[in-house]
Image (cartoon, rainbow, N blue to C red; front, side, top):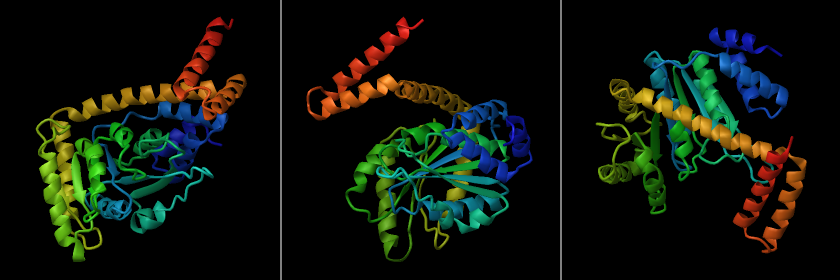
Length: 330
């Protein structure tokens, strides 16, 4: 096992094997792995303003992986080095994930200027994994100046990915039916760019209608970037339609973020959000690590299931007991 310093030097050389190993350490539940990961993250360089973190979300079937394959290729043609972090939903029954996104990005997976890493969501809400933020930092330390985070595609719980990326892109599929409206309302106000996918064949007219509807919707919303008008672009990854324009708009959005000093503001917000998330996760881990607390949680769970206690009241009792014991401990 490499030391944190050895990992840092390997990342500086652009060693992808070391990058994969480092992300595995960050995601590992083993205490010794977590200790190495924490020290490594403390010594890697801070991300520069030239780097860009791009979050991409959309409903299942919108074609996220296919579009990312095309966008990544265009960014590489423009001289960028692209890392793609995909998040697969974990099974509620087994806890496992398929992690098949790499097979849907064969060109990026084999490119010398790209890195594709699938990770499980592990039950974390918000469309990302628990350690996606740390994986982004490691990719940047390895020299990738464009990091794309593809969410699980849940559609309505994307605040977390918006909080850890600089640009947030929403993908919409044409002719998805009225059920898509609920997804739009949940995330359209977060989107910096909107791409309507599958604008080809029999779906061309539907795609252009979706563009018009989305433009009408964004016109009623306040963009997150001052002075920015959210572009809505019809695309087809299979037929290379709108991909050049989409890439141009991503770069233009980056320029606007830099010009208004908005990128620095977003990075500061990302760090504050990371602190609060780490506190939330750490406190929960500490709470559940106490064997006596775990027994009480199971007892309270049984009482809640039998309707002897409400969930909120049971949680309050458990927390009060835990805090009292910790205050009285020597």
